[in-house]
Image (cartoon, rainbow, N blue to C red; front, side, top):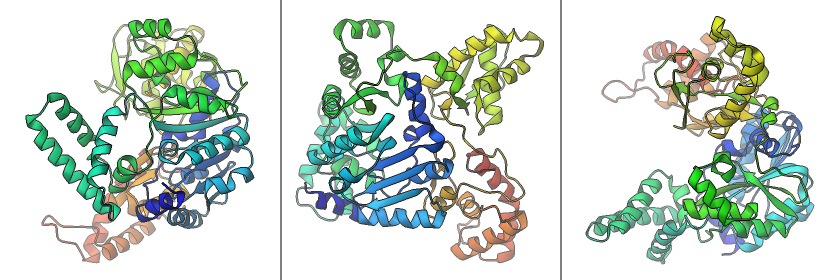
Length: 523
């Protein structure tokens, strides 16, 4: 597929661009530090995103790291222009999006501390992949980190079967949204007809339909039907990176690495099969039928640990919305409590210090605490039952590392500047105010894409720090009347300005509370 045609497909059907939490420099730096690196300071980082779409991932970073510099390169003219308009609307001066072909600008790019290639490696021609790796080899700073995700073998096999069938069914082409509709209909027909076929075929089609039904038309086309979609064996990616002076650092999802200890029997099997680190990672993929990787690369020659460095926890800042299953957990020794994160991951512990720490993090959310800030708060919750700080600190350090790997707590090598409540004149992230104008999903201070309702979006767009509650109520009510936001019990649009104003005033404080809870407000 020509690069021009690739650009045309993204011009015709732009790819949804959101904050991808795993790409935040603070998280990349944390993984690098845990694996023995000395990553560049996040507060003054230089970030390049290749294939940045309209900046949905890049702009929240720029808004939350004002001392950083951010550059996005985008092949699609439509997406690049849209991103440039969003930057201007947000008033951000530390971020730029350029419309360019990577092959044309690769040689002119400067040095960067963090490079992000999200949704690129598997979905572009080979020449672009090589250009990307060339950029990483030339442009990464000495302790810089690159994020590259891609479809992986052997887990991509089943999806590739479906992809081949659907692409053949769509062989006559046509408008892209129409192709998506035809593909969805044909997939449903396949699943219906497979009821009389083998159980395995039914299972494959059903699993893929459950996944694809959640996708927007844009994601469906570009993730499943795009001409370029090449899965890779992990060892292939490692070898390609090595040819450009790069090496494998780790996965952004630490729990997916063999160092995370999957299961004793599997750990022993992996160690017995593979000699090198790359070989062990490849065997782990085979044993788990892995279909997707989020790989971090760094310069060859940088000393990288295979085991996580616990002392790195002392430099990190932690936040968590994990809640105990039983509501208020019993902090007594030996009484187990299960904590579940916003993504559904869970951790059980009977340790009083860890239980108290998780309760404390939930209490101060969305603010973050360091280990030395969290420890006295946790011990304070335990009162007279608290043990001496020394032993408690060592144990809490280990528990926080485990909870970070399990994604029960969010850990960054960067302190997020966020306000836990709405002030008299609330101010939201500049990027969030712009995003809320056109999307239900908004990147927050923790670089998580959070979903907002109509009322929250209307309020969020106005939070520039200049309006108090009465002014906000007036502005939101005017917008609600203008856009027909409110409906009565019968589904009819409420047009009476007085009634709309009453509803807005009654719901404004709740909307502000939800916005604050979503980590969208700044001091």
